[in-house]
Length: 242
Length: 243
Image (tube, helix red, strand yellow):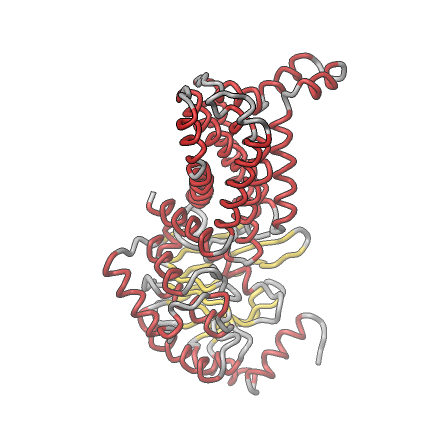
């Protein structure tokens, strides 16, 4: 469902993504790991067609991000870093706006909003201004926005950041529930999340993929817990052996 | 079309979700009426809105950038631009949706000045031709200022910078054809460049429309200029939306 071919992106002299290729099949949850500034968000932005790659391309549901970005965006639910939204709106109107743009109208729109409000547990704050909501609620409104059109592919940039432990648990349950029908990429700093959620993981640093494996396989291969392995892999590359 | 309408509706409603719309409309109505009466509406003893319309170019220079500055700067600042451009819409649709929402806002402001039309109709027998063309000219002028301001709003995430650049750019277009500026340029630039500068000026075209002379070339000037700036906005957004 998601195929990425040799993506490159630099900002001035800084190389953010340097030849990233991978693919994700239906039913897979791919954990995207890496230190800050590794190129995770940049890769996700290129997959969601917000950024254009310098070279390389990706296909989502057979639509190319370079030549058919509208087709990609129709099939994609994307939660950007920090879950941006329109703060002066309330979640109900915000989700209605997303439905309108995605051509979901009338009762279908009403049903879709009810469904995601229930799934993301935001039914009780539907008429409160988004700007006044807590970080956790804002993130869940963002998640609701990404799920509302029941997309085949989900790309979620740190979906559980800022949530309390209960909310994290609920969001993970939700992602697990959705997983069999979709191809999902999540980026995260929380390694336990990878263990509980992801069927595959990619570790990226300095724009390059260092590991493409499953959590269990990696543990076996490197002998240790994921935290240690992550530190070992990402710091040796940067020349800071800890 | 559906996407343009969705953006348009959201943007127009968001003016009223904050005090911005009310502040803008109140200030516009107070200033436009005050200028009219202070500049001799009664003393001229004519049932016409010439004085009322002659204030529009100056008034719009401050007020149009004020309602346009947030359109893209705020999207950049709050990062919602990343949400917007990962929805299935093109940059052109987003730009048009926002432009028409702000233009409608200016249209509403002009519409709410109708009591002054009623006043002249009550006080005398005005010639409605120049009044209608005056409104048409004001809507066109507002649209041109708006497209310029939208461009500068797309340039930066700082609303104050966007406002100042817009005011300066609108001012340049307004005063380009004024005699004092043309005179000062006369010895420095070749005559054809001076003619081009003169032809780009808003003021002479607005004045002729406001006098009741609605010429196709003046209307197309405003439309082409507006379209040009909107196109530039689309280009700048596509190039630098992530910055």
